[in-house]
Image (cartoon, rainbow, N blue to C red):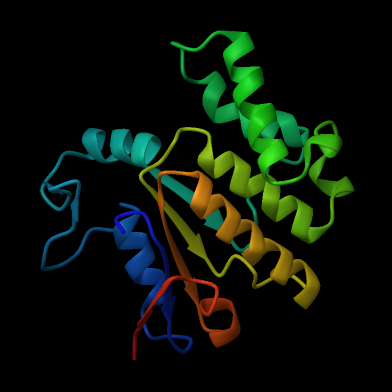
Length: 188
């Protein structure tokens, strides 16, 4: 289907993160083309790149990138609060629904320092979904987690992939992690 869960698997240093940065419009390719929804992203303006990054791409990093002075709820709702077309009530409903989807509604008022690694990563996942992205890019999302938390996170990905209308592209060098995806691409 168009909205799959894809793993990019390969050893350290083979270019997996570079590929993710290209897909996420953080880097420009020296040659070739990158197409999202049939739009060539290699020749568009920086302003259009920023717009697409904000509207179509969700990022999940190994180190979470949560804002330490904001609660879980505030971290998730922050990208929505920048959207002036939404009311405060709509922002609240959407952020709370996403926290429920990742199983963290009860911890919505906790700060990142009060969460386990697995919980912080699930907050990061909820935040990546707030703008209904077309593509979610996950760079070694289980890299900093113990095996139990990693398994729970990957199971969350599987459930979310059935609920959301987005493609998940996850980079990893662990075949166990990659095995949760519906499709695996190998890079050498």
